[in-house]
Length: 113
Ligand code: SF4
Ligand code: SF4
Image (cartoon, rainbow, N blue to C red; front, side, top):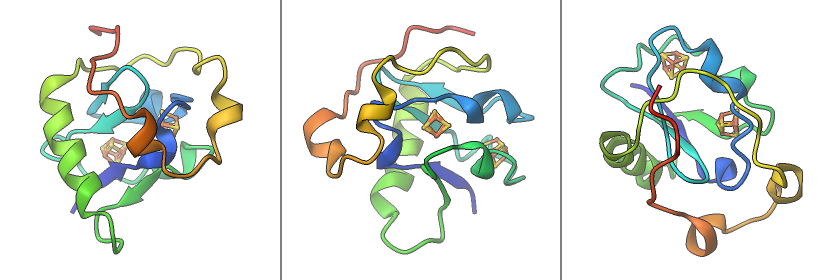
C-alpha cells in the first residue's frame, strides 16, 4: 500500500505536502506532483497536509489510474524536497473537475533538488 496524488493537485500544486515527507519521495511535474510508491513508507504524514485533499491511500476505489500515473511519472520527473510557492492561480483551479483530460502535462517540473 502507498499514498497517491490525484487529479485535484493539477494546476494547484500548493506543495504543503512536500516538506513533511520524511523520505523525500515526491516528484515534480509542470503542474502537479506525484509520489514514488517504491519509496513511500506509508507514514501518512502528507495526507492531512494537502489543503485540497489531493492525496489518498491507494486502496480507495477508482484510483487505479492514479496509482499507475504516480508510478510512471515518478520515474520521469525530478525529485522535489523543498516547498515552493504554489502556482499563482492555484485557488482558481482547486475545485475544477476533469482537469486530467484538459490540463495534465507530462513535462517535468523545474526543480532538481
Ligand atoms: S499539497 Fe496537495 S495540491 Fe499541493 S502539491 Fe501536495 S498534493 Fe498537490
Ligand atoms: S505517506 Fe509518508 S512517505 Fe509516503 S509520500 Fe506521504 S509523507 Fe512521504
